[in-house]
Amino acid sequence: MERLDNFIAGEFTPPVAGEYLENFEPATGEVLNLVADSDERDIAAAVDAAERAFPSWAATPAEERSRLLLRIAELLEQQLEEFALAESRDTGKPLWLARTLDIPRAVRNFRFFATAILHASSELHQTDTVALNYTLRQPLGTVGCISPWNLPLYLLSWKVAPALAAGNCVVAKPSELAPTTATLLARLCQQAGLLAGVLNIVHGRGSRAGAALVAHPSVRAISFTGGTQTGAEIARIAAPMFKKLSLELGGKNPMIVFDDCRFAEAVETAVRAAFSNQGEICLCSSRIFIHRRIYERFRSELLARARSLVVGDPLDPTTQQGALISEQHLAKVASYVELARAEGGTILCGGERVHLLGRCRNGWFFAPTLIEGLAPECRVNQEEIFGPVATLLPFEDEEELITAANGTPYGLAASVWTENLSRAHRIAERLQVGIVWVNCWMLRDLRTPFGGTKHSGIGREGGWEALRFFTEPKNVCIHLPRD
Ligand code: NAD
Image (cartoon, rainbow, N blue to C red; front, side, top):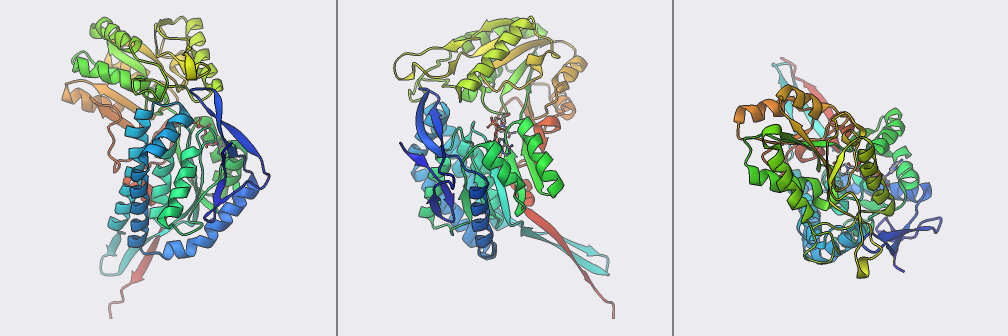
């Protein structure tokens, strides 16, 4: 069986302990490959390689760093099919989605930061006639990038590309549940001619390899995307060590539909926002607030659309929803449907495991699920489920709506649907989230600040925010003597 080894100092290296984890294909429930179960010794070797590579990478002209990142993007684009297939088999997402969303976005991430670094400039402040202050933005050194399983290469490259562009060396720890494309990326970096040690990839469990990366004293910053609880654990270790921290965490995102919305578009987007990637996107809308005047009509259209979604083999082009990442995650999602029943909710559609035939007979599939009749304060409306489950909540009064929409510990994203411009601005201004989409969802511009507030995280990714995070500002003050 294929083994995914670590990538340290430009070489594929088995884990020191010689231990591997089984990596499952969610659509079949079978083992796909084995992935290094690394520990602190592997992390130490990777950090050491990064430290050794840092002086020459930091001194490499931005134009040359840019050229190498563009080369990576180009090779990735050429190998898109292989990467998309690996991503689909690792995660259970439809192959067409990996082909049109995940891998193209990873290509864009590399291109975006490869060119952004050519336009980066620093600030100058003239202090009357007394002094000139200018700000140097220097790379940090070795940084850690820890990413989740839901958009594996998309989110890994969203961190790695700006870190490298800014002149840092990286130790990346991909999710142990979807590690394959990270290894393919390592191979591609060799092909591109990236200096050994500039990007190192250490596989393994979060509690072992991830925790060792966070705790390593030479790692200057941690850029993390994943669950809120994990983020809290990372902050607990990293904060007393004064590491820079960027935490992109969970969400419980509201979609808010007013009665003057463009109805068909809102319904169509609600289906996408709730069920894309099996609902396993941090930005997915899991609470759909619908104005009472259109509630019945919206619900029945949405239900018809959700019921008609094809749950199937991710490799089949007609499949709209694939498998959930693991059996454990499937059980978690199912437990929330049970909880919804216990809390008095009505399951309008789905709510159960889907059993397929043939290749996927043991796969971890769950039907698109819509629930109504739950109060905003109940657990199903408060906790992140991260699966194909959304609740419908009628509303009338704008004040009550805002209170309910803001009434969770999370604050990642929201989507607001209205043709009333003043209302759109007013609501956007009052929502406690990092991102508001008006009459759209997940429409992304890589220059915009991306991230959440409250328990959805701290810091922002994207554009200059990412390049600022991965650099240390240093102010130099030059006194200008008068004589
Ligand atoms: P997770 O927190 O379990 O794992 C994320 C990564 O952290 C994995 O690589 C894991 O191995 C590692 N990890 C786990 N414990 C660790 C520890 N103690 N120290 C260091 N690293 C550790 O999350 P997941 O289940 O992979 O992903 C799902 C979660 O990610 C959801 O909550 C989702 O909302 C969130 N997410 C957020 C965003 C965002 O941009 N805000 C994007 C995607 C996913």
